[in-house]
Length: 350
Ligand code: SF4
Image (cartoon, rainbow, N blue to C red; front, top):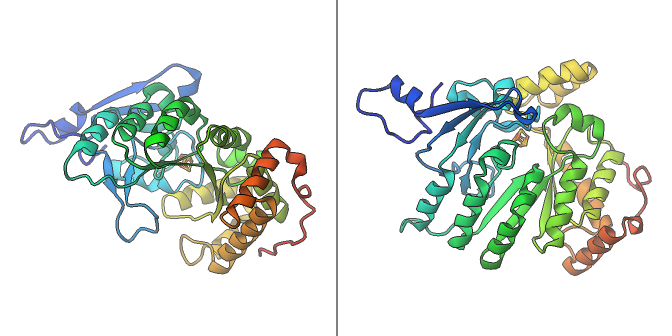
């Protein structure tokens, strides 16, 4: 494995491969929670990463204390990053987890340096910082405390309910700086969840996080990602998901259609052939031009989700009214407009 691009350089000149072996501690744990998972503990060289200029991402700086993710979402776009370590993008990504054990101290040092200008830091943008490993390594409390102590704005995107453990710290940070929390819930269909996101907490549990964050005064948005063509994009499914998101009191809902970059694409298509073989050709056509679904399809989904968000009272339009409706929805879900299946507009997708 190639660790030299991650690990702190403690090697003596000429040590080469020896350094790679010496810099890593590999562990496994017997508990059922970590069955089949191998952890590679490293002391990282740096922890704040700059996002390449050409990226589509709306942030410039990120912190990622882990590489690989036991949440094991079949479609995960971060799979490719495991190849940089000579690890495989399938089972290897799900079960070989790199842990940057010195992440909190590195971040603290970075935030204190004169060069750092206090820019926003995004977390959970590559792999989930509240995946199961975090229950054992507890890196996030130190990271959030460092950000709080330097009043440095930050955001976290997660599918992990473990974030609830750090609610007090998040609240303290929100008193001194801008804190954004988003939870990723692409759909609420339990069958789809079990097969395509096998290591994650259920969508219901994730929506409980949204509810708890909102109740504690930290606004929480939902990244409705991914919307999976032909499996999670039926008008009833979109409606049920946005309705549940509204009932949880989310401050926003942002849809994102599945994209299939190299690394994720092969793994997803293998899964598709196994679980939904009749869809393979439709996917090959839909993603024939690359990693993204056709623009007309993405626009259709976005438009429909925005319509539903407006209907259920989520979103930036008429913030006061939207917040009131979302609060009402949370307190009394029965007050929401009609149940799934009764939507006035049926979205024709393909
Ligand atoms: S939770 Fe996020 S990072 Fe982890 S496997 Fe799923 S999509 Fe990837």
